[in-house]
Amino acid sequence: MTEHKELDDLRVEIQETDREMAALFERRMRLAEGVLQNKMEKGLPVLDADREARLLQRNANYISNPVLREYYILFQKNLMDLSKYYQRRLMKKMRVAYSGLPGAFAQIAVSRLFPDAEPLPYPDFESAYKACENGEADVTVLPVENSYSGEVGNVMDLAFGGSLFINMMLELSVTQNLLGLPGARSADIKTVVSHPQALAQCAAFLHEKGYEQIEYENTALAAKYVAGQADKTMAAIGSLETAARYGLEVLEANINYAATNTTRFAVFSRVMNAPSKGTTGEFFILVFTVKNEAGALAKVLNIIGAHGFNMTNLRSRPMKEPLWNHYFFAELEGNANSEDGRDLLTQLGSVCDRLKLVGTYKRI
Image 1 (cartoon, helix red, strand yellow):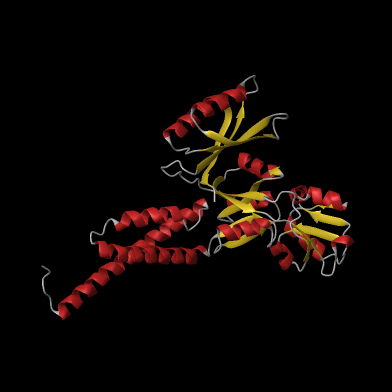
Image 2: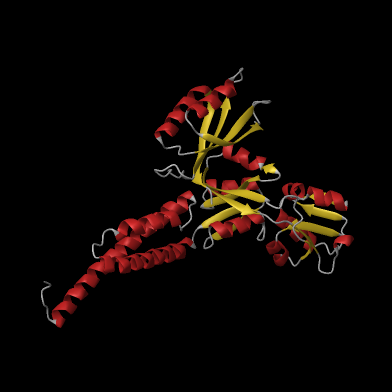
């Protein structure tokens, strides 16, 4: 039977408990700062819904009273929300580099991945990549592949030759639109200016219309250029956000060839993300070169197959030096930090001239 206590005594104990809880709250939020710092270094999002669900289930078991357990779950949810709000407040100091101007698809990807961070635009892929390497930015977001027009070779080259790691991959649905000056009509257009990837994604539409095509550094810069020309015969290709930002109108919507047009954006960081203990939903990327001899690539593929890893992507790219040599870019499903993963890397190291684990990540 619960000991009977006077009201004043109970209030004193509650006050003491509140003091202890305040100290624990402060300690927990300091730990949340450390978690955020780790996530910022690795380019990871504040929210990890799967982990939160597991923690709620685990922590609920600390409470023996079934009625109190219901309230404790609510308490934990509120505490996790407060932790995320605090992390996002601190995260406003985070700087995220991308290639293009505000309104470009890369900037849209940044806003999806890091809505509370400061986006930093750079004129090209290399300068955005180097911004993270030299510390101007905390992470860099760059496109690596489009579902229709294929890989972004320049970014793959940076991943091969640079020092950064890929810690996250976002699949962004891309809808391309024909953008013109206010009052222009698609029938007026003679020339379309855009990035080569956007032109390729809309090739069937452009060919049907017979428009002249001019390549530009990226879609947002092209839209800005068109907006400044005062020429109603010129159009750009881009997103609705791009049109709104540069005062252009959508002359024709959804002009990309594939209705499921998707671009994968990688988050590059100076620190590699350690894989989780599980294998579900884990991926990793390897870049490597092989000896210039018969069957060299087959040896690599056999080793990967023998370790049970599903290779979801394999591409080759020419190297700058030596001439006529290539490196390979491979994505594998599984955990690089598992026993099989570590053994895989060891065996590949014996048959590859160069081998680099570019990153481990989950797709979002």
